[in-house]
Length: 293
Length: 311
Image (spheres, rainbow over the protein chains, first blue to last red):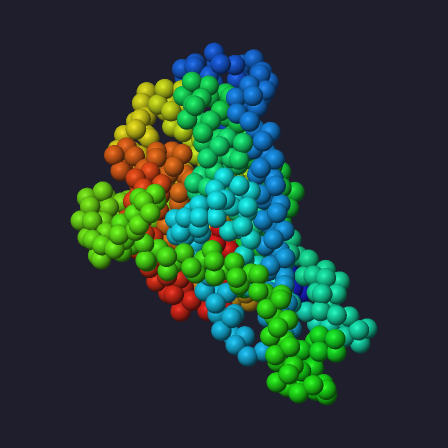
């Protein structure tokens, strides 16, 4: 870090490294960038275009890339073909409660690991890290049986509860808390702040970037979750958006592509908006996990 | 409350004895971290043991009794030709997915590390698929692969080429899944490679330039060694991610046609929730866990202090 700051003074000479030398190379760079964006962006463009197509245009061969007579009819058709209103309520409720739960669990666990001293602490930290090695997909059968025994199949409790415990959140917030300057925590002590107050009023606000990043990644994780809601729900009024769109494909697909694409857009649009709004946090958070760890 | 800052004051603060304080902290710890730990025990650790237990029993999720059958389920699974196909599929998806995301991700990172106008927008477009619901984007790809009305048919038609019936042709279904997997995960590897490129100290490039190294030599002797640790990290996370692929397969092919795209996780799902063979699902879960466990141990062994968000 200190080295990087020293070099900062020579930024102009260092910048030339990253600059493509000659004009032909530069043009080739732009061409390559355009091709990459076109290829990766095309499926999303195709999705958007299809939502505006009339049914007759869907069946044109070869298909058109830009709708000839754009229509909005697919949007209400999709909304009525499946209970998207309910899917939105379910997905939003499950995501918000799960992410709030994860943040709470992560913060309290990290606080306990950083601020308290007691025998067996290292063992407990190891157990929390060990949970990282158990992906949720591996444990679906036992957890399904457990919720069946509890009579909680097809409930919000079952959709939410397995999402709440978090090893990643505890780990990331522990790192953030350990990095906080000690003088600030000492000052809190002098002011007579208790545990919860120190956590809530001092440590969490100072760890906001980590909280936001972790919250966003957890939101994406829960919103897009597929296997668990697929097996734990069995009526349409409890389904989440990803399950809903998968079932819509089974029912409407291959005939009503415009309607199905409008449905797919309903599923991805909220996260697309969140991503565009907060991409800096998301991308930096993901990259920091890999480079710094 | 004077002990609130155990970290800084545990040794210095007078008052209750050290043992008393430790036990009070222990109690407080249980209050604060207890719920999280309890849920880990119930939803993560207990199921691991239960999976192993189930794998030695025969049960259809309904019968009142689970019958102990020893290693019979293991023999059944290991001699099942479907399972052999599933193992092969899992490895093919892993190999294809990891190779393509690493190669294209690196190429895009090198490209977008250049000072090109609009590169931030380009990065956003390339990363966006990683954030989106696998089920929803798989639905879009079913339409793209549609042999009659799909996008690929449209793109190939000027060349008088007719695309295969991707998802219904057992030779093309796995390539189709790998294409969608690569499309979705490419942005992730690109972002990590970009971070890796930016973490290479600039002095190294300057020193190399001073020593008369040309662009290729700088790439060969500075960039490639500089990216080695991050490439290893991406290799491991790529293996883990491909191994946990479910939504793409479920929506695109349901593991078919005739087992052509079923991976170990999909096999687990089919055994458990379609065939209602809890024992065989337990066997699949045990294998899945052992594999992930070994890969994660390798990661911890070689890349210490690195933790990734396992989405």
